[in-house]
Length: 328
Image 1 (tube, one colour):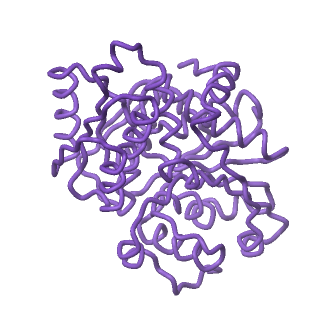
Image 2 (spheres, one colour):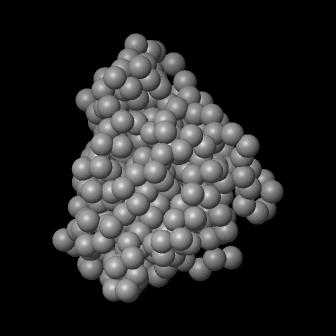
């Protein structure tokens, strides 16, 4: 069992990063409550309003701020389909170091442009597995520090600030639903919430085509997947890793899967009911609530983590399904 960062450590980091991160708002979702019925209360933690458009800035800043001056002089590297890349580029500039980042060639153009805007040097590749090899090569050859997208105590402390804020902003809630890629977000959120609200259910949601945490839970140890096959590229981690896996096994109560169709219809739902245009990963918590969790969570108070919105309009228009019977 992995012992995650303490609330004291998470609070100290939140205070340390007060000028670098945004305390994102919590929104009551009246339109979604009406759809669920039976007195259900729904709140959304709007992490897509964080710097760089996702929660990822919290973990990247936690890691880079912890580096010693000699390491900052050598710079950092990272590998990502987009959001972690943007966050690492942002954090590197904020702290005053350089970033050389490996990105997947299918990354959304808006994310590539954002990395370049923050001054990062980019290395593009077609294969997610090769991407990690390239980043490790940059680390070895150039001495740059590898800022992992989801693994390690610094990442968990950073994402733990999301859980801390949820508990501060919402006096009472029964469940929180968190999207899962590699497990860095849900591991940190769950670790924080279970220390402050031990009776709250923490539920993770993965795409059917990127279910490494499901497979890892079933096997009892971190597992890879052969192929990532989902439109939610931000949730497309090709494997789970020990620290985040153990943190999830310790604190996450339930995992559910959603299809790409459910993600697409939930993107449309959030636009039509709440006027929010978000990427597929951000719609995952909504897809879970109105899909596999609809009956079990009806009548309860639920927090949805809206993790990111880095998507360009042509891609959004292609992916979101705006005409659908959401009440079905």
